[in-house]
Image 1 (cartoon, rainbow, N blue to C red):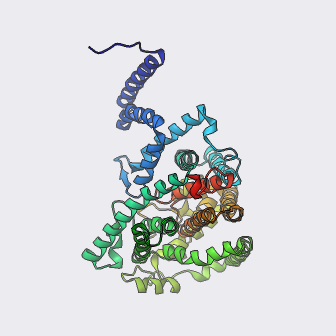
Image 2 (image 1 turned 180 degrees about the horizontal axis):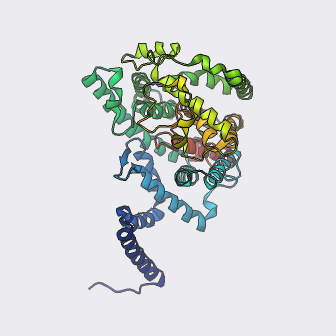
Image 3 (image 1 turned 60 degrees about the horizontal axis):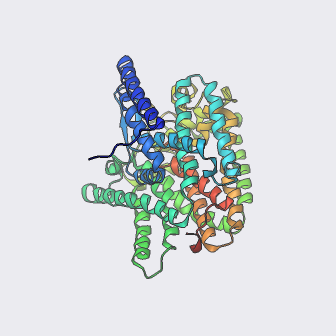
Length: 483
C-alpha cells in the first residue's frame, strides 16, 4: 500500500501555476498562430529542473557549443539549436538564482572593472534600442546580449570556482570540437582533396562557413596549450594534447581563413608584449597609427584611390591566388569588406551619436555606399553586415557605442595584464595568460568579421571576461591545493 502524504500549499501553487501557463500558451498560440508558444510549458519544466541542478545544465551548454546548428523558421527567423533555447532558459535560471541568493556571485565581482565596462556596453545597447529607427531589430539584439551575458558571464562566475570546474569546462568543449575538426578534415581531404573552393561544404551543418569554423578553432586553441601543462610529460593525455595542437594548427591552415591564421601567428608577439609589460605602449601606438591612417584616408577623400577594378575583382579558386589578390586589392571578399566599411563610416558621419540602432546596418547601408567600391557580390544575398565589429558598433550605435566597445577591449588587455602580474603562482599566471591570448584571438577575428552574436565566438568573449574577474577577485585559483 502506498503511503499518502500532505500536499503543501507551495506544491499546489506550482501545479496550478503550471496548468495556467499551459492553458495560456495554448490559447496564445491559437490566437496568434504562433506554434512556438506551445513550447512554453516544456520550457518552464526545463527551467524548474535546471534550477535544481543548474551546474549540470551549464556544463551541458558548454558541450553543445561546438555542435550547435543554425535553424531557419518558415517566417525567416533563425536560431541556434540546441544552444539558444538553453541560453534563454539559463538566463531565467540565473535571474531566479540571484533574486534569492545574491551571495552566489563572489564578492566584488559586479564592481570589477572588466564587468563594469561590459555592463556599460549593454546599457548603451539599451539606449540605442530605445532611439532606434527600427526598434524591433534593436530589441532583438538587446535580448540576445542579455541571454549571452547571463549564462556566460554571471552563471560562469557562479559555476567555475575550482580547478576541477575549469578542467571539466575544458574537456566538455574540447572533445566535441576536436571530433568535428577530425570529421571536417576527413571530408575535406577524402572527398574534395583539400580544395579551397569546397571548404565550406566540409564544415556544415555545425558551422555556418569556414570563417565561423576557423574562428572557433583559433579562439579555443590557447586553451589546449594551457591544458597540456596540467598533465605530466610522459602521460597519455599530455601526448594527446600535444598531437591536438598540431591537429588544430593544420585545421586552421586548411580552413583557408586569413583572419584565423593571423590570430594564431599574432599570439607569439602578443605573449611577449604581456610578459614584457608593453601592453599600454602597444595599445597607445596602435591607436595613434590607426587614427592617423583613418584620418588620412578620409581627408580629401584619399580612400577613393583604393577603389578596385570591378572586372578584375573576382573570387579565386586557389588559396595562393586568393592571398596574392588580397595584397593586390583584387580579391572580391576583401574588397567587398572595404565597400561596406566605407558605407559604415559614412553612416556614422550622418548619425554620429546613436547610429541607426543595433541590428539595423543591413536595412540602411545601401544608401551610404560608394559605387566605386562595388563588387559583383554587392547584392549581399546573405544579408551579412559590415565585417568589422568596431565599424558595426560605429554605424549602429554611433561614436559613444564604438568608444565604449574600444574601452571594453582596452580594459580587457590593460587590466588583464595587471591581473597577470597580480597572480603569485605559476599556475594562475599561466591561466591568465591563456585568457588574454584567447581575448586577443577574439579581437583579431572581430576586426575582419562581426561574429560576436554567433554562439561559436560570443560565449568565449563573455566567459573570458568573467573568468579573468574571478581570478582578480580571488574566487578562482588553479593551484593544486585549491581543488
